[in-house]
Length: 235
Image (tube, rainbow, N blue to C red; front, side, top):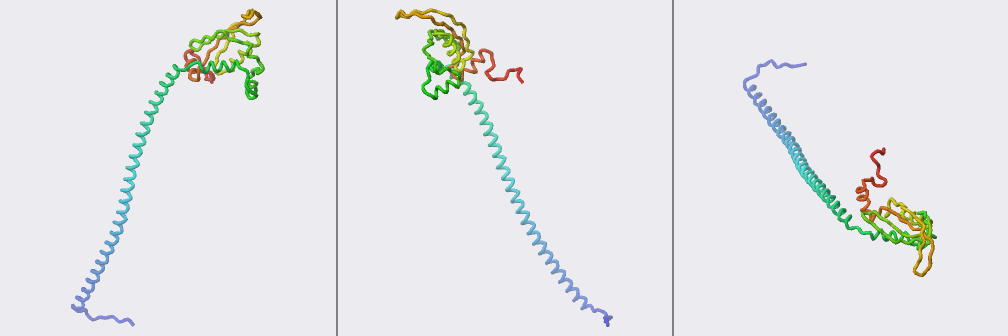
């Protein structure tokens, strides 16, 4: 059975109920304030952490930008130095070009007119198409004239085969270019001991290289492309 209090509430009871409600609302307010303060502290802590991380990222970005600028400055300096080094190399090449000597050419000519020293050299002669059994005494030079890398060789040989072998060896050498047999003619020579014989007088023209640095200058002066370089009409 439900009982309903139909008795009127007194003023004192109303006051007491009001006090209790006030106390309850006060505690709720205090609790809410504490909770809000706690939440605010947590949010502020996370915000501070995020701001600190952002500050670190910005500092890292500034350092990275500075390193990029330093790298770009170093690259510019490197390029400037490279240009200068290339310019100096050209100067050195030009100076070297003017200082080369015919020593290597004369050594090569001596090699071409010498018999093989051993089996390895004989095999090397075979690979070049030279007759290693050729008696190099069958040719002797009487005139060696070079001017602006244009060479004239004049001499005598026992026969045309000897001239042909000499020409073959000159053509195989990297120091002689555009070798051309200008003429051969039969002649008779008398030696100081009184002996005489028939020989072949010859003259050979060629372009010569003292060294590797000669190649570019030689062909530039002649207005010709370097050997193996594509021509303007080549595809």
